[in-house]
Image 1 (tube, rainbow, N blue to C red):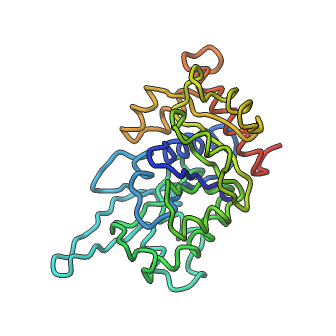
Image 2: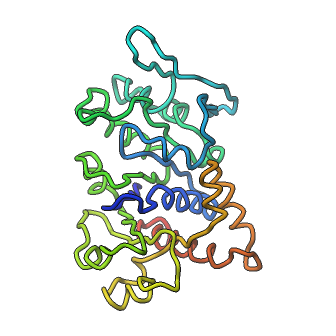
Image 3: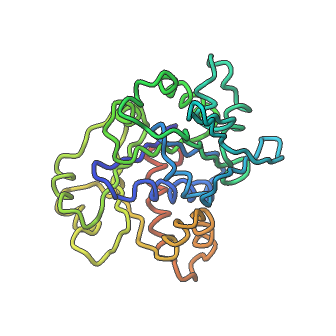
Length: 283
C-alpha cells in the first residue's frame, strides 16, 4: 500500500503533513508504516523525526543500537556510507533486499512499527535521475512496500519523472494545498489526474478564512470524504523544528476530549481516517 504526498506548489507543508498523517496512523491503528522520500536526497523528511546531527543512531531489528558516521575520502571527495538508502541501492540483486536488510538500513521512529528511510548523503544534481544507483530506486521501493502495511512517500513539489511515476503508481495521492494560495480555485477546478484515488489536504488550516472546507465543498463541489485539513498548531510547529513531531502528535492524541488541542486532534484524526478509508485500509 503506497500513499504519496505531493503539491504542485512549494512551501505547501507537504512533508509536515505527511509526518503528521503517518504518526497519527500508527498511533491510532495496529499497523506498520514506513516514511520514504520520492527522491535521492531529502534530509527534510528525516529532520521531522530526528534531531539534526552529524551522527545517526541506528536500531537493529534485534533491538541493539550503534552509531555510524559518513566518512569523507579527501582524495576522491566522495562519501562512503554503511547504512541507509545508498547502501540498499548498492545491492546487486533483489534477493539481497530481504526484510532484515531493509529495516537495518532504516531508522526506527516507533519501535518495530514505524521506520524512516534515510536519504543519500550526496546532493541531487541535474543528472541525478540518470545515476546508475538511482535506477534501482523502484526495486528498493518495492521491497520497502512488501515489509510494511503502508508506505508514505514524500514527493514534495517534485516534477521529475520518478516522482510522477510514484504518484501514478500510488493507491492514494494526497494533494497538499496552502489555504491562502491565490491559485487554489484553479487547482480544484482542474486537479491533476492520477491512477489512484485523490485526496485534498489543507495544511496550516484556519477555519475562519475564505478558503475553508465548507466553502471549498460549496464552490468547487469537492466531495466531503475527499477533503481534509491539518490545523495550524504553534506547539507542533515548534516540535517539528526540533525533530520531535512524533512526541507532539502523541501528546495531542493523549489529551482526549478534555485537552487543549481537542479541535486539532479531531480534525487530524478525521483526515487520517478518510485517507486510510480511501486506501482501503479501514472501513
